[in-house]
Length: 88
Image 1: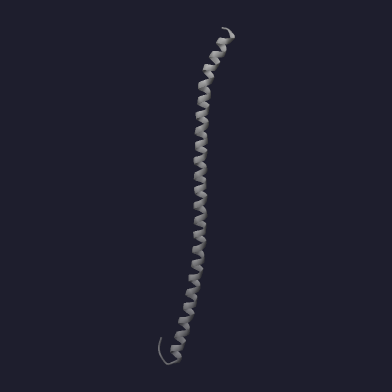
Image 2 (image 1 turned 60 degrees about the vertical axis):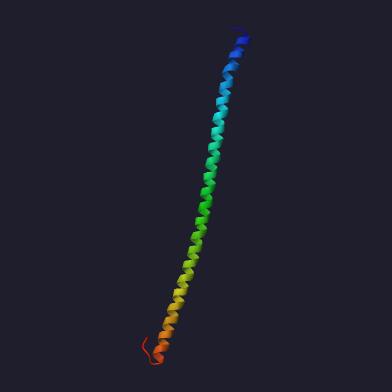
């Protein structure tokens, strides 16, 4: 075998190997992009859930304060009714 034959055989082998490597690299890049998109979506969902939870906690605290205020008002009105001679 002379040098030209070895070079030709090397070129024939290197072509498909390079094509396979490019396909594999493209698949890896596509997979990485898809996983990055999933992680970004997960982070976004987590942030929205945390914000929703924080809002719900604030709403709950306000509702509990409102209940306390209403209980005080009911007690005050009952006392007023008793003072006026009625039965609550």
